[in-house]
Image 1 (cartoon, rainbow, N blue to C red):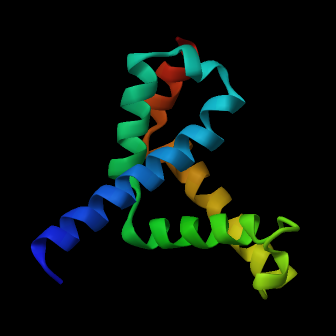
Image 2 (image 1 turned 90 degrees about the vertical axis):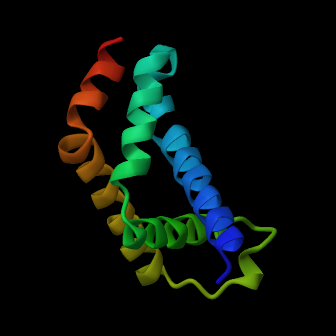
Length: 111
């Protein structure tokens, strides 16, 4: 893979993880008003997410999106696969909030 392609893939991965973190974590709390604390938390999420975590999050997003009536017929995701993807995503978010980024999460929720 060319260096430019790798850099582009890394940029897409960072944006994807940021999107996931912002769309899942921030609306669930008052973090959206946290300003720099939310930015620090998002940065920690991105830096603390492994390549395996990113793949698991992609699988989770796909499993969720495949439930939409407009695309459901295009996917063969089973209930067991979706349940597994949900569990993996939950474990990733739990690890990020309670271990990898606990201080950043506390500050974001506090402010």
